[in-house]
Image (tube, rainbow, N blue to C red):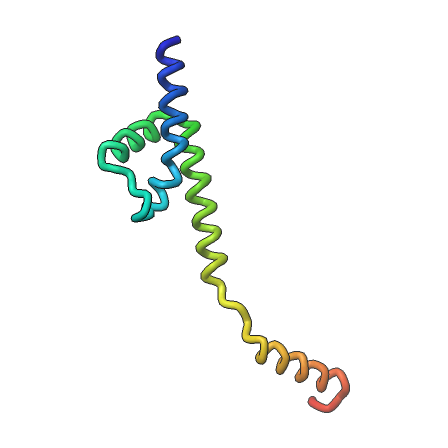
Length: 92
């Protein structure tokens, strides 16, 4: 029972730090002891390591989404005009 309670407390402690650990935000850095403790916990706890993996997937998805370039509105308008001219038979 003590082992279970200890694990629950460690999971709670870790859960509050996983995002900071993964973000490595200079404004909210973990100290080296916290990093070691968290990494040790993630190595043995499936629940917390799954949460970390989920955060990584979300971060990757958001990074890809943010990196996408939006189309230039002028180019889109031009393409609409070209298609309209093709439909009207003005271009072949």
